[in-house]
Image 1 (cartoon, rainbow, N blue to C red):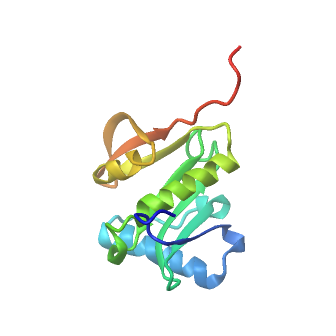
Image 2: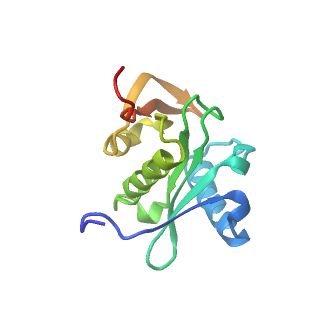
Length: 162
């Protein structure tokens, strides 16, 4: 990593591969960010977690600082999706979210090489997503009373022109 990027250890696991400790830690982070901090009363733990890829970013002290999940094409959108992006409040504005997104885009490209990537971003975070190549599509909408924007990262086609 460059000097400007934080030093993080990334892991990507299915729910079955996670230890009970890791699962609890990542679900606590999601609960702290989405339920408690943002006061969104919805079932954060859902059936999509069973088949998702859970991407975690730990710092050098092995503290979980950021998390997101990757969903396969056809689960939420036609494209593979990134969602539940969360950065611990104590570690924000240090580049951890951007580093996690960059790593996850690489993972999605490896898992689903011929697909664009889609997500639903809270509007105040748009610049973070744009910094790794996502573009806003469509109109802003409310989700859980928070303004959101659909975003897509269009992957260049490696197919030769016909």
